[in-house]
Image 1 (cartoon, rainbow, N blue to C red):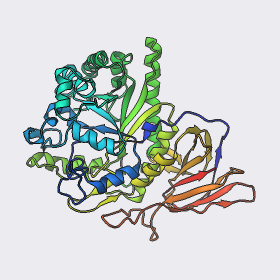
Image 2 (image 1 turned 135 degrees about the horizontal axis):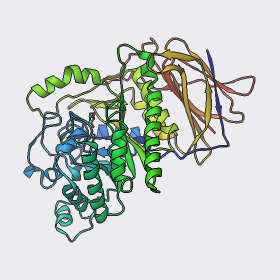
Image 3 (image 1 turned 180 degrees about the horizontal axis):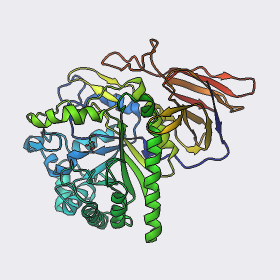
Length: 501
Ligand code: AHR
């Protein structure tokens, strides 16, 4: 089978926001404890953070990190995580039925985030708390000094403010599972009050209102409309959360998940436009896809969750440590293509999460850290898909999917950097045969081309494990054709990066 990708080199579109390549560290399972933080590990630094995990985080190249939750934040008191570690309270974490030792809090996390060049996107608790506590955290974190809260920060070892600019106003408040779950009006009101108060303290903050937890929520649409009716003149972004999984063995629909994400983004963008037009709001509101990934949610909801919530209250239990296959990596790669394609509306995005908990990086206590299959599309897109999006057309065979009807076997996006380098990302969703892809790009030379696909035995269910990264990008041959196009052969279920200049 053959496909053609026509790229309009002279018509650059939206700038790819650097924050599109964000990630997420939640106090959940082994993401913080036994994840980024493990005092006693042979590679741990003086603060107890693992250097081997840190090296992989640096290699991943994310730009922003959402913290500290997720569901966790809706029951969290930030004060528990500051001050001498020995004095911090041990608490029950009702969100994940775990015990929270509070050994990592704002100071430790910020030091770690700074060491890996990640901008913090701090979430405030609007589940059990409200505007006052959010504003107190803001003052503690960002006020230069001379007040009780800012002086307490200095006494706790940090004279300079943390200077956190990005703030999430709660998390998934539409979900009945959320601590402090609210109606859209209740949430809209508290989000608006919190936003107003936070802006009184620091007009420079950027605020994210919590949109729906997923596109299938019964309140989707009405939720966004109501929340924006309260907050549109006070916030800079509204969130989307989007997780994908293979349901009932329907691989074709799973591989086409980006079709769903494209539609979800378009729907939220339409609601933003409506509300802005109706209310005459000139302020831009971006879409923050601040949780996205592949996640076997069915397994969590039907098997694991009940056992976790019926059990005792462990510290850092193993929660949702999905092992990612080649197919999962291709879906992650195509979701990245969707996010980049939608750069005009998506202001940021966070792969949820960073370590161990549905994450591109895994590690074992006292042992190794390794790259899951999904690490590679994220790393390579974050490194190379920068600059402006180039409009393109794809002509390719289609596959009939149960969920989305006929879907192109090839998805693609192209960007051009300030230095003129063109990066093309390709996701081949075809299950059975290789695809010849032609790109008419006369005069361009290939700088690098790689493909992520099944290993030599052709097993697209292959996963990486400690010490055995069987799945990794390999060089992709790019051939010139008689008609001065470039041609590559993509194996079934694969993801490729071609860099040209
Ligand atoms: O991924 C786990 C949870 O998923 C997050 O804490 C929550 O925000 C979402 O429902």
